[in-house]
Image (cartoon, rainbow, N blue to C red; front, side, top):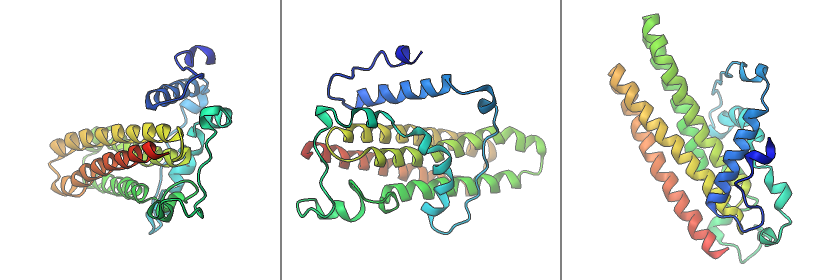
Length: 238
């Protein structure tokens, strides 16, 4: 089973973004294939964002989904020749000063500005979705909206989870391509959020929902593209 899922991956070459994406796809398929019936039927956990700091508030989601989806291939290939280049220390004077202040190898996830934006978006989505569902007095209307709203929350959460995983993969050497691949996955989740927001706003005619979330989603998508441009520029110098 495992061999079949990973057969499209060439482990004897330097990896680019496409190689990392193939690995992530195989990893997801492998984990889904090994999930038990009990796990598959486990209800989705409800998250309540109570903390005032967006990163602290999102921590519960990251604990639930983040650690289990870390690309474990790093432990297997970190000593391979094309990963042998060591990352600079944040205390190294040759390290870009701006990079060392808020992001880069060894920097805490909480200091990554784009991650904070993603957490803020996910939390805002969750709160506005709950408010929208409460405002629908008819159980039938709530039921009709619930699936789309839950999907919206799911994709909003996974924007931030992918950014966190990308940060964990790293910024140095060929790992940057895995980082970029995770960020492109985050953009795909952002696209889904925009699509779902269009549908929900069209069916509910909620001006507040559209005003609060749609512009945030478009802005976040733009930020993610800028972030990938920054990472791609960094990869040319690593």
